[in-house]
Image 1: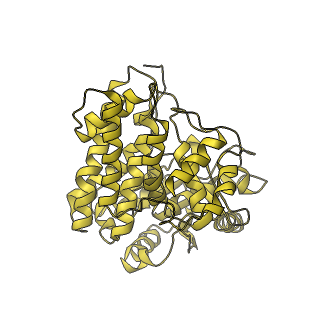
Image 2: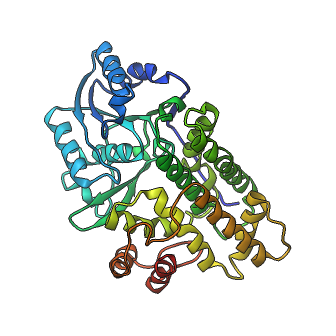
Image 3: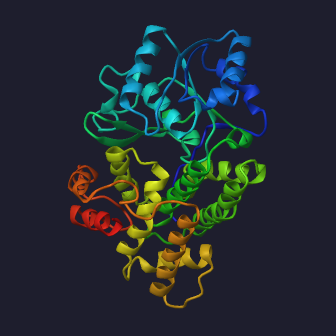
Length: 387
């Protein structure tokens, strides 16, 4: 086990009606708020009205940025930065899923920065003194409610890239499982796949001696396997929604990656290009790619870890590591299929002609991956195998 520092400072307000506590939480950091949200769902469920009432009761001034899209666009980020500057805002409150929260983080980073916010995903600028932000989560998927990461799309260049800094971790996040009752089956399934993908990215390293991190990761995977189908079968299953919501946060707050290298993350790099080309739901793209990636990287060196996952998570009974790994990979695909996730790029609307451009952007800064280093030719092969 490697040496590490660990800090996850986001305050979690978990449970029914916890949104009622946001007033004092906001006022601990600011009094002039940018309220960020997406489409009409937060209004249909009454959450928007509830939040606005709470803000007014605390005499908190606010300006709204609505219409944030899935795979949030840099155009929305730029609009948010402009509003914060024009109205001298000092706090951002995001109500919605991962896209809304990611957009809020990029805005927070962009307000004090003199250049364009797209510089952050492109690695041309570092986040310094961002505005503080809080979240009210309505979808269990990305884990962005408890980390400093964000992913932003740029339609002008058909690209989607990540950014991040510890200073972008939300000051607080409201996690009320009942707010996810209205999430449809597609987004519930994609969210479950997304949570599992985050675990895969951190679980698959070549380091040894991280038993506790691996055991936590395996427990989170088992949680998704148990409660993802339950949430699909009954949308108001509070126990299922609660377990998925907390799994989402724990999967990507740094807990399972402590004392390990950064993880692999090649599959996320490849999926970002699917979303950039065809606006694909992130979890659906990951569900397509991960079993293909697992099979592609399987070799003598990687087989023991893939076999460990197969045995400890899926209950595979096989002495040979390669045999166990293959059975585990099949189990991953079968589970994603059972959730209704697509299993090929063609199903996701990706064409063979799209692949060269996706490869170029996925490998823009060189080879990708930590568990298995992928050159451009490897990325191309995985895309082709996924067609």
